Image 1 (cartoon, rainbow, N blue to C red):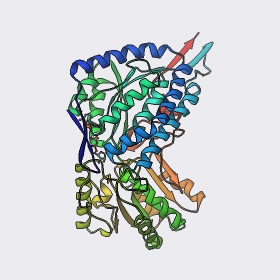
Image 2: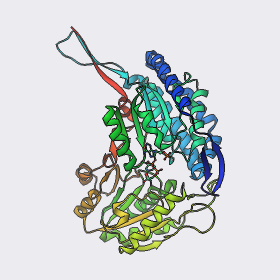
Image 3: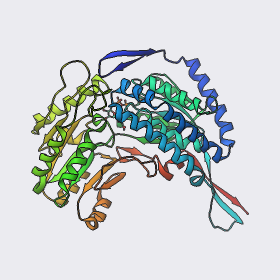
Image 4: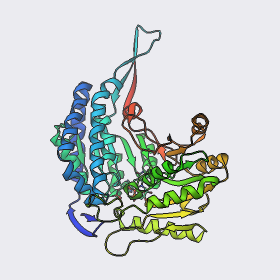
Length: 453
Ligand code: NDP
């Protein structure tokens, strides 16, 4: 049995029976059968399904957004934006999949040689709760257009979203069984992954689970895309527009109540402007409104689960013991719900817990850097490598600096965000492979050489 708990009230919303092994077997069989037919459809036809899916998402946006908010606690306006972004991404791939997957001629000694993109088969998608619709759609939209099927093992605190996603694909006219949700425990995932009808796996989640799944998939020689944790630096150089940087920094840290892999987590600020930045950052952070996530003016909802709040609080307490200075927040909000105060820690050093570990919640760590070189050194002094932001008014110096930052994306004078048009993914402990854009749609394809003499 899976229980969905509203993290704002701690009340149970609904309970769902787990799928039995027989049901899981049936879903695997249906998906494999449906995918074989789907792979034979022209890419234009597969891509056009995504237009229907975008329509379904928008038609049901209010209900889906409320479900997201009730199950994982994000502010309702952010949940609505998540559905809209999912719909936009479906439209993007509906337009571009036929272009990205078109045969690509390559001159050789053959009379005709080309690269063609064939699907891999049925992909197992292990997904997290933080963007329960977006995380799955951003994988599934391109994967389906490329001719694959998808079985979703969603995080078990968002079972309603998991079933609503399956239903949305059905409503959009997806062939029976091609996309299905498995309500199973994490401990049952290994058996599904090992099933010969699963060709590949994609996982968004923690680095520790990513390593387990990667090891198993490696043993099975199954393709993987891993989108894992991050400790993204937000670097503010001495010549940056400080008010603009501070405003963006607050959004970059506290959106989704800080529960995003690409939230900025370490604010690395040139010491000469640090006081100014910290003052502007704290001023903006105090305007955040914590409360009922179903209220439209709420900007900070509860954290998604009690244990996640416990974890972040332990990280804050440890960092304070290590010498960080508390400027704002620093504790759970009393009363019902897994709320945590928006927290700002100043004078964090690169060896403190708030800098070495991923902080998946509303906690900002300010690290003061001696100069630009020091800031880049600190930015790279992490095991992660997902996104990074760099704030400076010297764009020509930035050209060189961005090449030195170890991350899958560097945003100059902006906040790191995913965008259907641009590849998304990490290096180091943040994983490998790419989602979105042209690179993302190719991940679950067999890039096949066709050679005609
Ligand atoms: P997990 O990595 O545990 O969960 C992510 C997904 O993996 C869920 O569907 C989960 O299912 C599944 N899973 C868990 N254990 C296994 C396993 N042994 N084999 C296969 N699948 C498994 O993340 P949490 O929700 O526990 O969050 C913990 C931390 O992970 C966060 O604090 C954050 O640091 C990071 N995280 C990063 C995310 C990102 O966007 N990159 C998203 C979410 C978390 P189930 O729910 O049933 O356990």
